[in-house]
Image (cartoon, rainbow, N blue to C red; front, side):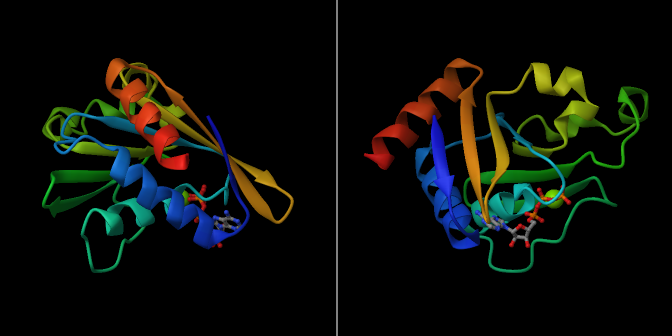
Length: 154
Ligand SMILES: Nc1ncnc2c1ncn2[C@@H]1O[C@H](COP(=O)(O)OP(=O)(O)OP(=O)(O)O)[C@@H](O)[C@H]1O
Ligand SMILES: [Mg+2]
C-alpha cells in the first residue's frame, strides 16, 4: 500500500490512521520504520505515540536506543538503532524485556534478527518537498493492520 504525504501534517495524520488500524491490544507487534536520514521516521513514530495517548515530549532514542512509554494500550517502545554498529552490540540490550510491548523500530537493518520477526514495514521516501510511504505486511498481524489501513483510506 502506498500513501502520499505532502507535508509533515500528512505524516502525523497517517500515523493517527495507523493507530486506528492497530488491534486493541498491540503488545508483541513490531513495526519497522525505514528510510534515509530525515525521511520522517521519527515524525511518524511521534505521531503514533501521541495518537496512542502520550501527551508529553517524544525524545529521539538515538542515544538511549529505547524510549519506553506506558500507555493505555500497554507498553510502547520507540527504538532507534542508528548508532548500533552490528547485531553483536545488541546482544546486551535485553530485547526480551521489550517482547510484550508495541515496538517501533527506526534503522532496523542494524538488527536483521529483529527485522526478520517483524509484523509490518513502513518505508518512507523523499518525493519532491514531501514524502511517500510504502506499507508492507510481513505477518498475519501485519496483513490485518494493512487491511484496516486500506479500509480507513477508503
Ligand atoms: N511528509 C512530510 N513532508 C515533508 N517533510 C516532512 C514530512 N514528514 C516529516 N517531515 C520533516 O522531515 C524532517 C525529518 O523528519 P524526522 O526527524 O522524522 O526524520 P527521520 O527519518 O526520523 O530522520 P533520522 O534518520 O535522522 O532519524 C523533519 O523536519 C520533519 O518535519
Ligand atoms: Mg529519526
